[in-house]
Amino acid sequence: MARDADRRGSAGNSGILSRIDPFCWIPVVPMVLLALVVVLLMGIWELSLILLVGAAVILGFDFWVNSRRKSAAPPRRRPRRDDFDDLDDRPRREPARRPVRQAPPERPAAARSGAPRGG
Image (tube, rainbow, N blue to C red; front, top):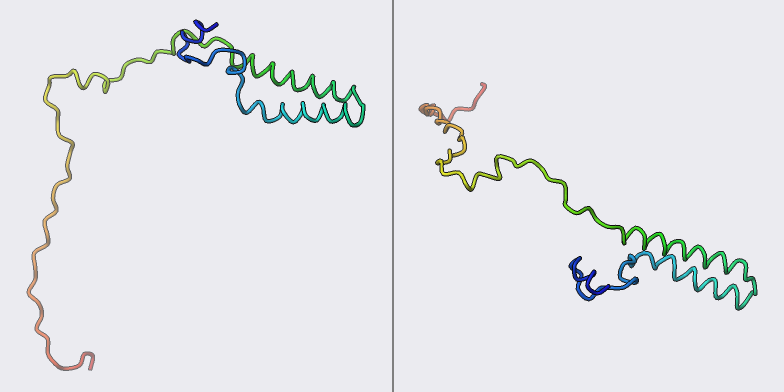
């Protein structure tokens, strides 16, 4: 098993518990504790058995999902033109630039008189 874990790149993380998602323990731990409380304080072993089986189902499902083999190779995509730009020896074009707008010709300022407007 240790060699299998090393092949997958998770050195030191071999074993069943490392294959179970940490968030899976959030519903499982309370279910187990509740089953213990129910059987010890109330004596209802049927209900505690149902809780334990439910926790085991959750753990089993999570273990099954996380231990399935991944596909051997990721799906290949066709190379894009951008992938080969660094191999291209042709000179690159500079990006298109907007032409510079020329300022409108200035008009001479009108002479101001001290007289009030409009009247």
